[in-house]
Length: 478
Ligand code: 4AD
Ligand code: MG
Image (cartoon, rainbow, N blue to C red; front, side):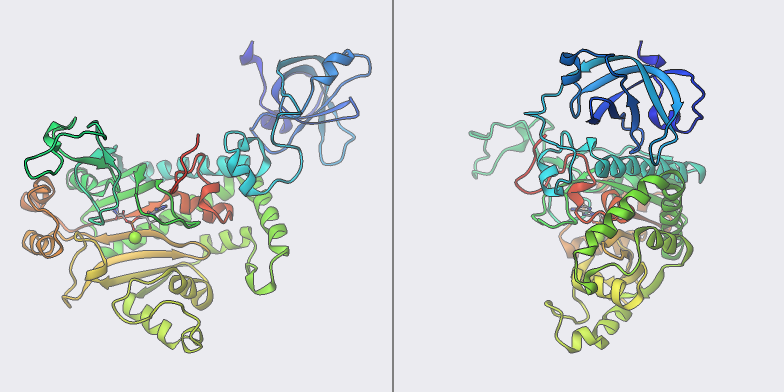
């Protein structure tokens, strides 16, 4: 029965010639007991169903309410309505599922994003979220396509691990030990030998270390999976569970790494522009409306489409960390004491600094390289100066850091020395060090935060609105 269904998007792309079709979807609105706007999630364009007078009894008409699900069979005819070339003259209408209008929480009117976040189980049925999640899908597909076409091997790295890839200690523990009475060692500490894996384990913060193992065999790999961080950052850019794409390339230096990252970002944005044009246009319109209520200086200079076209057609700016600090120190913002946080060589740049560079100074994405070694992870390659590492962060307008990457330290001795200095346990990472003992090669990679990319492409401003069911401090509903 169901496979005879036509998707509304496909149907709207054809000519109405009186052909009979069956469509299914959810009611958006029902006007004058006559016009049903039906949506099946394939597009934001609703299909108009015309109900002839007397076709349905009073009781059935009453059941055609917002979000009720219907099966409709009828004839495709040209529409006289504005903005639609086709409508369906219904022959039969079957109600698959009722939706009590007294109880259904989402009305056909504008709701705030905050309100819809509380109703995340139903928010896909709104135009904004439908557009966001179709774009999210397209971007995910484009990512696989990009790497596949380049011959990268897709690796599934473990979700449960015993190591802290970033060495930042922001991990969620995984355990089956009883919380109320865990087994203890003589000194009172918890005895993880009794735990499920016989050791202490956590959810992965990054697949990079395992990715490096694979890259030093396949030459080029990528991961695309969920990662978890127990950082208590309650911001519009941080999630406790987010998806990350991590390519890792052997025979590759920081320069090659930057080139790939730039090509990659341009490719996936272009793909979304080509394949989700309507949805991006819808969100561009939405953003423009939203921004009308903001003061002039808070509005974006470019509309969403212009911004994306600009990124696709222009090179990213490339500067060193030292140059970035100099620009900040020379800036009017610094001189007028507009920055809340200190600026000097050695700081971990705050988001106000990154945003100044990207939004005020360069007005385009910026790749910052060669950061001080003390503020970056242990695996990054030490530069000749002995003070900086071959790291690269890509900063995007409106987002801040969207990519973090580096050339890796491939020299065994230098790596071990660095791990010791930073308190990273070499004995636990024996397998990682083995890549440096057996056929080590210059290699590099980066991590792109998928939700930050989706934010950038959709013009949404809160990361909770671009992942289906956000996990953030004190929140894990659904
Ligand atoms: O800069 P990060 O921590 O780098 C790594 O994890 C490396 N292992 C990547 C690599 O070289 N293979 O994270 C990479 C990116 C960030 O630039 C950001 O886009 C995203 O992951 N990210 C987050 N996104 C959402 N919520 C969070 N809490 C995030 N933390 C990082
Ligand atoms: Mg980073």
